[in-house]
Length: 222
Image (cartoon, rainbow, N blue to C red; front, side, top):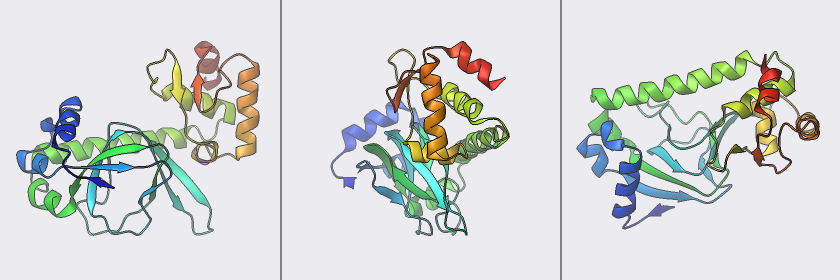
């Protein structure tokens, strides 16, 4: 999945996401390009971590298995974000299953280079702290709305998604993953989606959904 002779593409992503603002020259030289086809695994739970990745195109689903065997989705990551930042500076194995839900492109730095050149670099460490803070905030926000009806949880989630650039269109994860993320069954999610479509709040074109009536969605979250 690593792409050879990709220096020009790597430089383009480094410039696009201003990665030189948090990666020193040694870490920048260590960047490699990786492509993952849709529905392929990036990490499996309890894998050893060999790379710190930076998601630059596509979408990832992060999940883990409860002791009762149930799969729980706890994050859907989109560009730009670090993947593996929680474990990279420790010897712990990977906590979650990470799957590409679309064709996905990432830049990666080998873990030994991260330890050698990043563990004592204040800029790099501040970047990792910022990434962890954002993920903790997102997790806490999802937990805080779990007491609300599913329609309210779904509306809040959709309103928080960045548009794709096509005027109000957002891209949602697969229904099974979204249902798990919102603490619901897929059947219940389908029922609520149908109600929102019939009410004229969203378009029926899942997973690329147009938000047709944002005030109505916002009213559900109050």
